[in-house]
Length: 299
Image (spheres, rainbow, N blue to C red):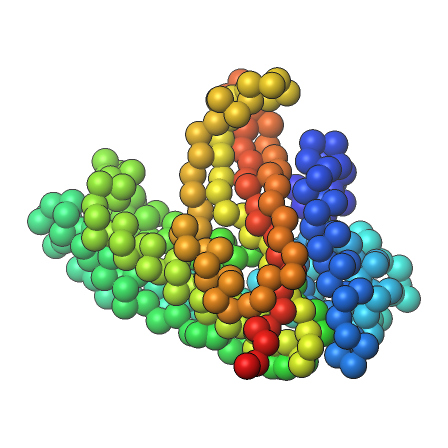
């Protein structure tokens, strides 16, 4: 469920999520200097569930929406904009990581997995760690349809954790198909855990460099990122927090990395629910960090 229907669901169960996302984006377009480009870029826009698209179009000469899923982008525009407003929107279907999943797949297919499996779990996860360590991560990724230095506001809309989570899941899915009994076993292998964390950090740095490279002089960044997930079975009571199991998504140094690359003008933290618990499965949600960022002042 995306776009209009998802937005209606969130208005009922996670209204603060929509409010915080919109407030940060609209503050950034208001705060950008008059001399800065009036083009606005939203990375990871998807179906624009969290994106206040009419307001961004009104405040911008052009709005560029970038995501790997072109159908979702088209849906988001159709749901929110009039035909006249759509003329000021450009859709860009691109891999915002610069091809990391394909690069990791190349490393995966080079491994002699059957031989490694015969040598035991430690050898298998050592090879998985090497795949992550040797995977090329473009820094910053070069995205042909997104010229550098062109945008007065660049929004990263809840896409950051996907850039590293999806490739890692592809690797673990490959291992699970080879050896279903090893599902979850990666948590016990220090070398693999270290490699996975370093992989996440490399992708975060590359994404921060991408955001910086796309900005016009005086431009601002809005960074929205899930930082921790949680699952729960109890909802709507004062004891909800006691019934959660939390799962970190980004390295603990994430806030430090943000501050190393940008000056923080505003920071907000909140949580949102993506699924309510049912009889058969727990509910899910995320804790989010949201920032308005400026390039560091040149000393």
